[in-house]
Length: 288
Image 1: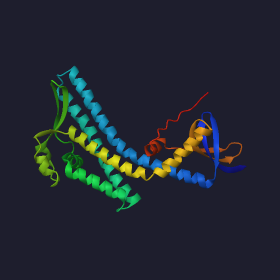
Image 2: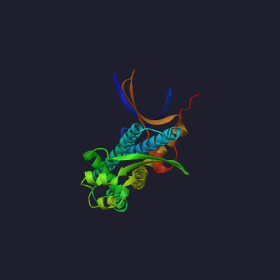
Image 3: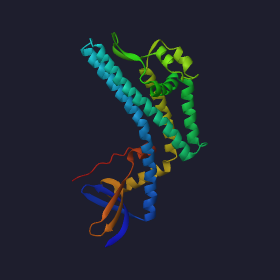
Image 4: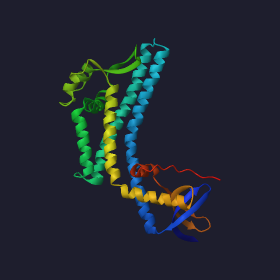
């Protein structure tokens, strides 16, 4: 025989489950919708995190090759070619993740808030300022298009040793870039022509990532500010569970046969709640 559906605010301290308070269907749905909204923010934020992860991968590989060079400065040309290919692979991943983040964010803001919304207009203003004021931002956008149509850019790895220690540069050839691609555009081509015949792409990637970090931080600040009410409400529920029980707070939906019921658990998005409220949440099991 099927039993009724019950909803509750609870804590889980494996293997123990404590019902803190029974919830009505309306309250359960209202809280679930808030959780879903904050989880959606967290999911969207992951696209920016991929950019940082790719750049971190690039920096780690550069560090690895520097250490390898320090151990054996007499690397052959084949080894350098493999290293150049490897670093280019990560750079292409980084450029693709940047494009995905920008395209998805623009579409999401337009869809969720509208073309004339504060959120969408802020994003357009910030990214337009980056494009107008920084060669790195403009050039790397076009370099991704270059890679799509022309393949890997021609260049080389330069490893040097001076009083400041070992240094790695991933140099691109200006004239090859200009000669093999005719779509740099009026906003990029003149600046590209003014670059040295060989120029290092790594500082440009660092600068563009820093610019996007600033854009993402400012966008998050505006969006999270408008989620303050929801975040504070979830924090109050978490605090209630810690006063009345112990363990990890959650919502429970229990249904099905009374002798072997099915339990659905909905967790709280602690990281986003912390970003909204400034209250650090560190939930752990309290086993006896």
